[in-house]
Amino acid sequence: MSYIEKEIEEQPFIIQNLLDREFEPVREIARAIRQFNPSLVLVAGRGTSDNAARYAQYLMGIHAKLPVALATPSVNTIYGVQPNVSRALVIAISKSGQSDDVRQVIADARAQGAFTLSITNDPQSPIAQTSEYHLFLGCGEEKSVATTKSYTAQLTALAMLTATFVDDVEAQEQLFRLPDLVARTLATSESILGWVQRYRYVDQMAVVGRGYNYPTAFEISHKIKDLCQIIAEEYSETDFRQGDVSIIKQGFPVIVLAPTGKPMPLLVELLQKLNQRHAECIVITDEVNISQYAQSIIPLPPTIPEWLSPICTVIPGQFFAMQLALAKGHEVDKAEG
Image (cartoon, rainbow, N blue to C red; front, side, top):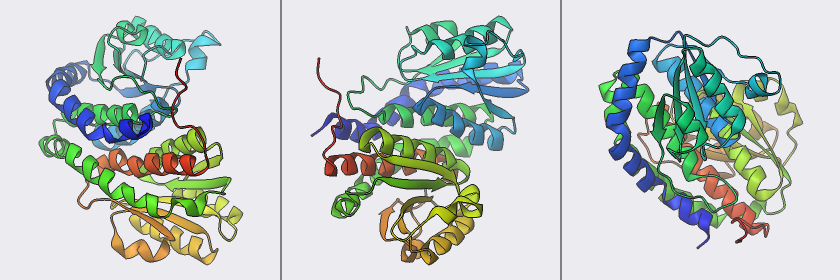
């Protein structure tokens, strides 16, 4: 078994451990944030962590009703400018905690009196040591080419923080169902093995999401590019349907992220349009009634709360990217030494 397959399969256990270990510390952080009473949230990350930051935009925008912006670290580093974030909750997300420009965002924010929180896999890392508060992911080393388990842990940490910050008891209870939902998602993802060879020779595809799963489109396309070495572009459903759907020709593969939630009617409309253009639709969904629009379907377990669905929906994307890379003959683990 490859490292990446092991790391994908570790995700239910990592999430369970994160919930068990960090929930009380997160409650303390949430109480401190409420006392600080931020007027906005700024989230800094790079690569996969930046995709987790996009999830924070939806989580805290919808649940906490706070404006959430993505940081632009180059403003702080290359241009030497420190935007005024003194009344902000500033969150740095980094697997390693080593990113110099993300650390600079946190350092500048803390100097201004902002509330600073880091989410990393290393409490002794520069970013963790620079922020006032830290949330430890506890994922262990990742030996695969692409990040998998750290991403879902980052999303879980952000979900914990949001649920406790707004003091939503039902949401907190839903979080403890998450490890089981992730394990069930892993089991259904194995169906990909039966049809992944169909896409062995594709050299480009699109990944489309909306709402909470717009960030998931970024993350899945990132994994496909990392592992399969092909062009994979992420889109919001509305942007894709109103403009870029015109690029779709017969047989063009489009991954559509359609877990149950408020965007579902819009995604069904998109799938209908894609079918009219004879696209090759790969649909990740728990809604059996839309399977008629899919050439390939990846089922999700039912009853996933929409706000937590990105933590599950990304997993079939990880599995698909891994299996497609193997079908194409690419290496999925880092070289030793």
